Length: 179
Ligand code: 5GP
Ligand code: MG
Image 1 (spheres, helix red, strand yellow):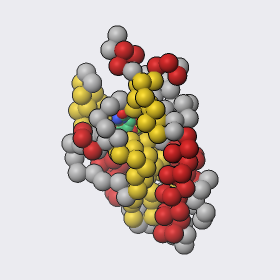
Image 2: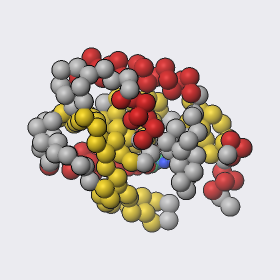
Image 3: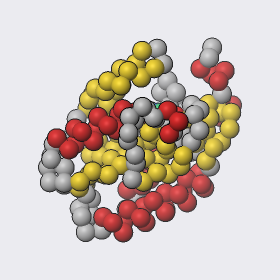
Image 4: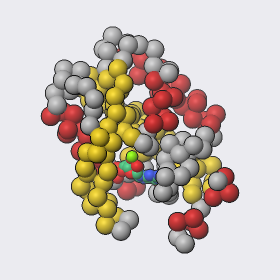
């Protein structure tokens, strides 16, 4: 599995340090707010799990699963809800946990959906941001790292269902997906 990685972009240590900083910032803001942490399956699972252990305040955890319609490898911008929340978020502050913001379509869809559901406030916490590919104006309130326009795997991010369990963030060798 590790042989398929071209470069390690952020090591396990890098990630741990950055998560400590992000979680401290979020804890300062949310300690008396009782938010719902909504993680976007499956990519954000590892990030969200590590983050909530660092959030030192009362919170609830929920998740959604979405899929985007694709045309070849181009996102069409249409997003479909595959798995809905289990609880109401009406009147609740929400923090959406996402693995990576690419075109922005997924988070645009989700923020609209959660606003329609009556969330009191909505913030976005993304492990990675790939601004080079943005199609719609979506910005995260908390970002772990900004990454170049490369295909990233590890720490929750997959290629064809694989590599989610790598403890670091890396660039996948092109030979893996170009054959
Ligand atoms: P967006 O809707 O912002 O285009 O896409 C967000 C989703 O696309 C992410 O949640 C992730 O599942 C997928 N994605 C975008 N860029 C990458 C990448 O570099 N690597 C992986 N593994 N997934 C990506
Ligand atoms: Mg995703």
